[in-house]
Amino acid sequence: MIYHIKELIRKTQQEREILLFCDFHGHSRKKNIFMYGNSHKNDTKYRERIFPYLLEKQAEVFSYIDCAFSVQKSKEGTGRVVGWKELGIQNSFTLEASFCGSDFGKYADLHFNTSILQEMGHHFCEAILEYMQVYQDLRKIKTIVSDIDDIMTNQTQNDKQDKHSQLLLENDLKQ
Image (cartoon, rainbow, N blue to C red; front, top):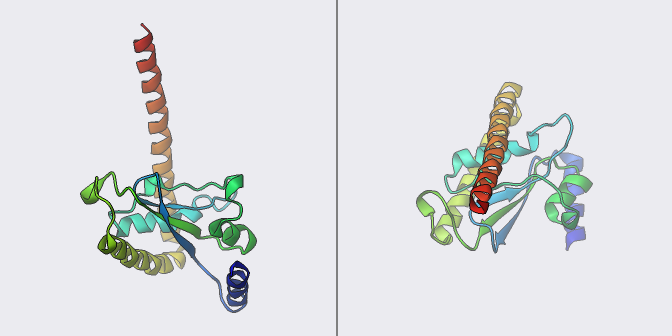
């Protein structure tokens, strides 16, 4: 089956560009609805993060901050990595919906039910439409990439503060 899906994608790519590939999964441990993506280390800085950014703007149940954009060796055979590396689809993702529900917003401490997941699907489609508009406008892309850069900078600063606070707490406990 995987062979046939890859062949279908290759055949489609001969006729048109594929802007997005997404595999939908349930996650057993990490809470929330989030995405796993891929990330180039070169001139496409944060381009692979635009769609999840737009999705968070559409869906309050989606958590951008819980997204991860790296490729571990053990994930080389996943759909998103094969779509990205082997088939050249820049926006290749896995959307994860936790079996444990959400830890923020109006669905905090609730399990995701069918209506919440259907609502997420609706927002996913809206984000695709918005991405199609953004994709054509270099000015909008630059603005969004700048916003993502700010998010990443703040997240890095918060991570450093958390580590510093943890070290202070550990030192206080030792005394």
